[in-house]
Image (tube, rainbow, N blue to C red; front, side):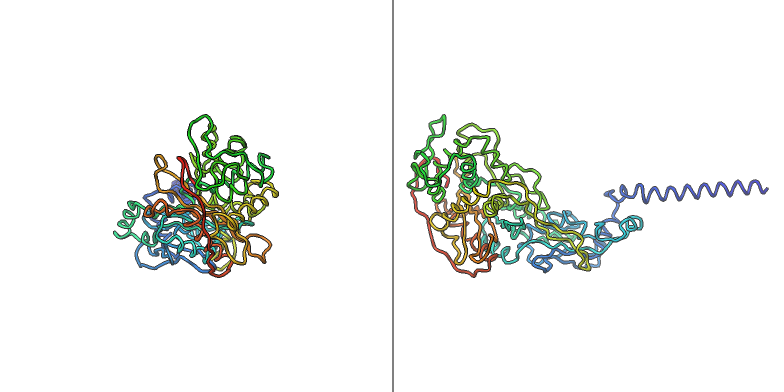
Length: 505
């Protein structure tokens, strides 16, 4: 009898061990698989069972959490939602997360191991830390100046601190309120359908996800390539450029919006945006050097993150000579995001170095302890410091003597470049107005901000839209906000004439 009891006890012990092994397998080995199973609602219930951490701008939260008392208990709220939507994105119980709400979800939801002193213990117990905080690099005054400057028009603004790459403003209009997508009711589904069906695409982040023909603002790249390769050695010497300029191997004429471009110097051509001069310079520089210079500034980079992914800007690497001529004035297939154009302006301001742009300054726990930081990082050297110094002078001449007079700021040195980019079939679409710039206070040792503005306004008359007229005042307001230099209004205009078959500014 004792023998059978021992056997039964041994069998029970084996079954107990098997049960413990299986429980360990389910909880530890297979735990991740079950966690990620769409049918498992425990993760969602746990995710929304506590307040989400906040995103901070200027030391203040622009997000919050509201207790609904429902199963998915806490809903995301937003302060000035449309103002910061291109940065925060949304956190929705139904439609997931985007932008910082997505890339920083681990910190905000409390699941990131950085928030726990004992991350392995949390994995074993399935415990969740309180959500942490994301401290952004945004300057709230610059962000608001950009948003108010664009107003009801479609467009975008990106502003960067040249010496570090810190993003000071990132605005896209029209915008939307991310709070409309918080919750699980029918209103959320209705908002989702309405926002996605809107013709003006309010959920599109035009600052980093939309590329535009940069028009004459790309002449910053072409001028830098011409100086770096030695095609131009003296910015005040004649470039031997005809007006009109016949595209190589064709009978197509390229003309200008301004007078005096025939045989103009690089300085004059840059100030008054002579298409003929820069088209010829691009051809003289050659495809290899132009593509290399464009890549050094950041074109064709498919890996740029800020921390969410930016759309790559494009400069074709296979072009014939007529296409190269048009590409060198920011037309043909050349396309850029506003962020990319701000990076170009920042590189000119910072001695030729292209800094990696970043939006998150540091990540903190709920108790305020910093768990990680982001610092300056140089991506490339786009041009020599000597070339950058010459480019800075060319850009300041645009503001003091050329088409960018509307960006002038008392008490500061401002460099800029206007652009009006044609697009559409036969270039009949309404032009995009561009302005890229940088500003340095007279009492400062280095530039404080670099800005890129693009305005696309289908309601405007074709003749009323221009980089100097539409985009430059917005850039000025952003630069003033960063500099803290008051609200003085510069005056200025541009001279010129209309004419020719191909005539982007």
